Image 1: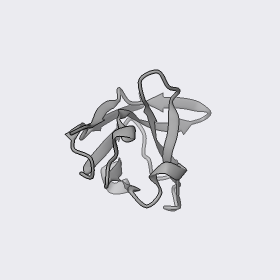
Image 2: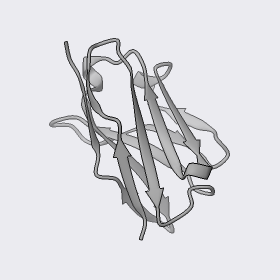
Image 3: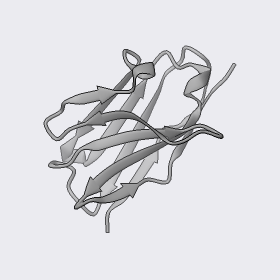
Length: 115
């Protein structure tokens, strides 16, 4: 059974940094893309960043230049480094991957940016 477990969320002041991790079990991530989504209160879940098996990345416009997605296939883990955080980045962040057209989600980790 494929499982994803996020960690690393928390409370940070504007301008601060946080690093999120997503550990995957039940499958190797070596040949699959990994995504990070977020959902703020009252808003739809949105795609924040994607990394392909070859390491190509793509970002939502509002996080370009501030967030970095990466992967460590040996550790079966994906990461999201978030710098220069803003209050509007406050949300629950979810890790996602797909295998054979089935979506797998983590439980989410809360990120709160506030002074």
